Image 1 (cartoon, rainbow, N blue to C red):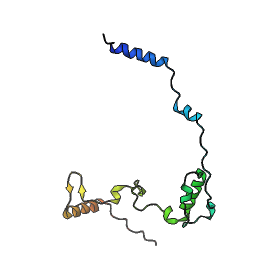
Image 2 (image 1 turned 90 degrees about the vertical axis):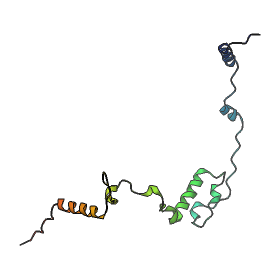
Image 3 (image 1 turned 60 degrees about the horizontal axis):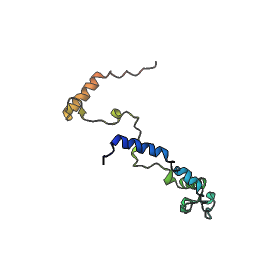
Length: 141
């Protein structure tokens, strides 16, 4: 018995697959099945009557309409100032647009490394000499 060459077998299997009817896509299969109705929402208090001490967990259960969940969560965030305040330790709360060179003073100089106290003092003197002297105050006569 002679074995069939790989490409011939591959071509035959592709043609056979085209001849067979394709199974229905999963979306069509789901459309044919009846969708169960969501359970009715439980008895919930009015959103306006909620305070920071109220139990909001009932609004987060399954079966509660999304609009009602959102309204309850908004009421929760508004009811307690501690929840509205930004997190103090959040790294993304800083103002990264500020120039870092003016905020952070360092003893590191490019090409020189870390400067000691004498070198820093000499650098400050050079800056003071290079800066123009302050203008004398104008006298009104």
